[in-house]
Every structure is written in C-alpha cells, then in structure tokens.
Amino acid sequence: MSQGYWDVQNSPKVHDGDIELDPKIVAELPSSMVVKSCRGHGGSNWNTTARIDGEINNEKISYFLKLTEGPNAGPMFKGEFESMSLIHQFIPKFSPKPLAWGMCGKSERFFILFDFHVLRKGNPPIPQFTSALAQLHNLSVKENPTGKFGFHVPTYNGTLEQDNQWTDSWEVFYARGMRHMLKLDEIARGPSKELKDLMVPFFDKVIPRLLRPLETNGRSITPVLIHGDLWLGNVSVKEGTDDPLMFDASAFWGHHEYELSYMRPLGNDWAQECFKSYHERIPKSEPVGDWDARNALYATRIIVHDSALYPQVDHFRTTLIKEMEKLVKQFPDGYIQDS
Image (tube, rainbow, N blue to C red; front, side, top):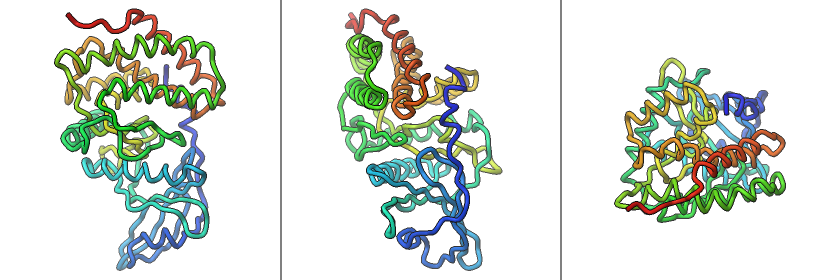
C-alpha cells in the first residue's frame, strides 16, 4: 500500500459560489449576527461545504456549514454531531465545535454547523498530532457511559452506516462490524469468490488469534473514544500554529490501537513515525509481539470500507483480498489458549 491508495479520496468536489441560507440555519446563528455572505468553501465527496461570514457588533465572525440530502442525510449529520460534540468535550483545542444540525425548512436537505477555523495545507507535525490523539484517548478512558464497545447512535463513514451496537467484547464488536462492512461491499460490487473463500479462515482463525489474547489470561481492554475515520483527509493544521484539527468523525468507543490503523495504507516513513510517537505516549497492548499483525487486521476494516464506498475503483477490493490473504497465511492455526 502507498500514498496512491487514497488518490480518489484526495480529489473531492470543490465548492464555490454563493449559497442561499435556509431560515432554519439562520435561526441557529447568534441572534445579533448580521450575515454578510455564505459561499462555497473547501471540498467534500459527499456534502456541499460553505463558509458563513458575518458581524456581531462590528466584529467579524465565521461559521462552517455542511449540507447534504438523501435517505441517510439526517442520521449521518446526527451521528457526526454526536461524535464531534464528544470529541470537542475532551480536546476542544484540536477539534471544531459543533453548534447545531437539523433539516432545512425550504428543502429536504440537512445541515450541520461548526465554528470556523482557517487551515493550512500539509500533514500536521507528528508530535503535535499524536499528542492530541493521545489526549483524546487518555481523557476519555474513564468517561464511557456503559464501559462497553460501541456508540449511542449510528454513525457513518462517508455514506455508510457503521454497526455501533454496544458490546462487551472487543473481538465480538470488531468481527460483527467487519461482517457488516463485507456485506456492504458485496452489495456495492457484487459477490467475490476469493473473498467468500477467505472469510471462513479470517473470522474463525485470524480474528480470534489476534484479538482474543487482548481479553484473556488476565488481560483486558478499556474502551476509549475513537475518532473513527482518521485518515489524512480528516485532519489538518490550524493556520499560524502547529496545532492539528480533527474533524468529520464517525466515533465509537474502542481499542486505542485501532485509531492509527488509518495510517497503515500510506506505507511510508511518516506513518511509521506516527506509530512510534503515539506509542511513546500510550503503550502498545499486550501481547506486544502481535501489534503489527493487529494493525494489519484493523486496516482491513478500513480497506473494505473504501471498497464499498468506491466500487468503481478496482484497487480497493484487490488490496483487501491481498491483505486478508496475508493474515490467513500468517495465522493458519487460529487462537491457541495460553498455558
């Protein structure tokens, strides 16, 4: 895998031109705000994105607006609002504050509104990025309302709903979510004999071999709040600083190691330095010797998601098959109880 893996995601539709503000959106802005303009700003593969500029007592103020439509539009923005609200609660310096979401009054579109940040191009500096991520995980670890893996509302990666049912076991949660994504991939692309043949050893051997040791023989995982879609298109740098800004979350409570598996498809030194820097702050889980294989396993969930989301791009499914094959060959015996 390499930087080219994400070429399709890195070419979002860029929005420009004036956008009419729906009265329902205006109602969520400060009552004393005089709106000067609302224009397309930034880009997205799924939403229309815009910047709202105005003044309050002659002082300039801006907000970031997203608009979308379709059968899942409301649940998508509700999930994003709940995700970003929790993340902002723990790391307000490194995430935009969500202000409101809802349905427009004059159309069937939905909106979500955030405070506005000026961003600069380029990856965030690794120490600041991994420090912010570690803060999110460390500060949230004692705040899980159930102590389980999952989330209290459905969330969406792109347009695809995630399976967030509360679950006691990380192995069960991960396996169920992976089966869900493979089903969505089959719906999007049609069946694959290669994938069908791989699924039995993948679920019966690989997943138990790599995840069951995390929760047996006196070991356990305490769920932390996971951003849930932390590829490099969803993190940037605030202008004039080295502070990262993380957005577009699809959150859930999960194993902290899962978060950085989004960097694995890069296959470069930057990703490796991220892993090293993060684990200087939060240690790898035991058994440490399984870390790389766990990271590869977690990355298959990201790859199958991309395969289902972009069925016109062949290399996502072929990459998924190759990565699953590697793990099946590496762990043919499955889980063996420690003596």
